[in-house]
Length: 445
Image (cartoon, rainbow, N blue to C red):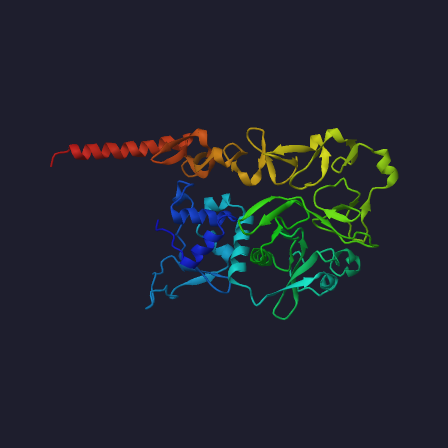
């Protein structure tokens, strides 16, 4: 197999995004000759395409198999014989079919969005507006699309937004070249040194990456996951790290109507925060109301905490605070909470899994091991061949499949790890080649 070749500009994109996208990280390791995985010909292929570079219109340009790689008089790559296509579709072609099955669709989607946002802005324009413009932005007509902006529950509800007309708030707006609204995000001043960009609403998914690029430009942090969950998890574009951050904003909260608030959902008189569901008020409604704890109910449940999972009250000593995930910032009954590393999660949170050892770990830190039908931490796995349970119809021989295998069920042969179920096959090949060599040397001329 010939080596995959990419242009300097595309290689720079891969390098810049290797910390936040797993596809870029794989390609970066391959192009630098880094490990893992040890069996690159099982992961990367040039059977269909090679010599990849970017195009300003947001496409990837490549040379199909069978076309000669030509240079023009200046030494640059010639466009003769080259083709182009959508980033998510083209980048899949550099991975083998088996490797594609192990890469998550969301990673290909994130690669696509990052790429387009880097190389194609289509004349889009940003505006950073003061708080007194927020209500009018929410009433603007939105461009057609399938993104979160089109389905936002607060579109057209400017009469609920008085709480946003305060000095610590601004709104970042994305517009088309004709001035149509394409995206928006609230921007909160948390302190003199911390500015936080709230949930991003856009017409097209890849526009989210444009907002994150603005965070990098302005030195802001932003919401890590663009949903109503994970209220405490923030993302710093400057170093590509995500972490939990408790945030509190002091502002006037005495109004007749209130919006649904994505991140600063909890509060009391004179402040909002993102971390304490036991506070008097929650802002989860879309009809202009906020939920509050009645005085008589507060007295009846003194020393108790309400668990939304079980729809019941429990002694506060029998409840645990959820640090991350779906119910981050809330208290749940102990039986509904599990420890993942140093943080508490709701036990049914989709971002965690119970691994082969019975421990809970983040799904992003785990590999699905097919031959065990279970998850294992990446540091206990090797990406190699294992003996599948499937049988070839033509000759009924057992097939070797590519995938994640338990490291301690493997052996190393010539620097490559193989599952014990297939290791003998490779030993046999080596021994046969060795025997042939000896016999050849022994024969007289």
